[in-house]
Length: 279
Length: 309
Image 1: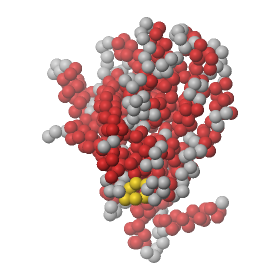
Image 2: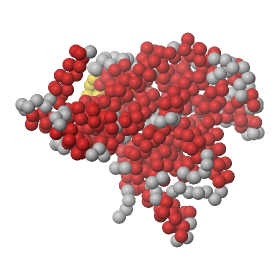
Image 3: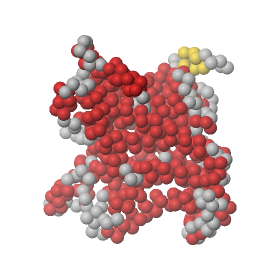
Image 4: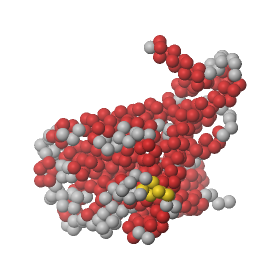
């Protein structure tokens, strides 16, 4: 439905209004994170140009985050957890998708149904019952608790399977005739062809882990293993009135996924919307 | 390095060995070997917890010990006589009755707007993509400060427009609505992506044919857009419902269920039972109830949205 508008000015006006609502808190947070705490409050009311445009810039809030609040460790933890989940998740899920799309075997449909079922289950629904299992594995307050449950991902298996189904079968059969093992076919023929879906899958796993809150909150107890979303929540309870630091922390939590996802937006959108428009 | 390579080779052989002997047996097991790691992960960390929730809900911890005692459905019956639980149920229902239609309708509207062919559309699409990169906890922190009753920007703007400042999250009549606004600020842009993808797949010729036949805007929507969008619509309606039925972080971070329990949704009540009152049985009973309610709601949505023949 690529409409050509009869009244573009009205459309522009609505768009600018929506954009303002989306951007206002981010812009205000960005500006405030470079301010002295006193300045934020001083220029808040009445609203003037000084509310939104800073006069004295300072990196105080960011320095405090890293020197006092331990945000260096938090960022390390978050990157460590997301990176390992992406690497293992890509490998384990693409292997499974290869199995599902190349072979005909007993139980394939049941396994596919399990895959479909799991990708509608958000982390919140299983976080509380999962605690018992992870606790009995001795993983509470370890990196294992943060990484391992996120590796097998129904959505990622589904995306890879969709892609693998379109790879011409004769290509694989020819490789078989030449004596290649199935693993070799997977590793040196199928995976190199699947770079676009690998990008999509990486972004999906990355954003899921980056934004994960309830499970890390339950599964970790000490600062040592704290990841960014949990750290934000703690920061609010500990330093509720240090708005410059809260804004700085929130901005860090936004800017990193924006820098990674925005240039690769096309892959991300294609990946997630494929699940809604196709069977 | 050589050692590692050898090990890799050995592992490969072990996993998918294609040695001449026993070739047929190995061929049968090959697909399962590919599937094994993922299957274990899915069954253990996604499927099992759901059954585990039900099992755990049948037990309670004996007073001052760690021993688990089987109590049947006692956790459930005690919930149904607890006014706190009934309040949570009511709050969850109220929250979902507002937020789900709101997010679906606004996301659809935004998608239609983003589908107009105006020159600056890539910029607007980019801007509306930003909330996808914002986690709900981050959105909560940002808006908490924006909505601060004394010093917040929103109240400062209201005052400068000669309107009276509002308490927002600090009042029991506005807290839940404020949470709905915060969650929607972050959610609508995300759900609009699915509608936009759907809209772009509707063939243009259908609209052209309809305009030739003199169909008005509403008729075109009813007879072309809506039927063509059924699949993404069903997907978004169901996903929005699941996400919001289980929404936890903004209540946990901003209101702790207050003021006066006005934002104490079931998910938060379950978390508090598990980790504040150390009552895992009761917490899991609440999880089971949330999942059952969600399932029923989804089943109804599927029934209503399924194409009729």
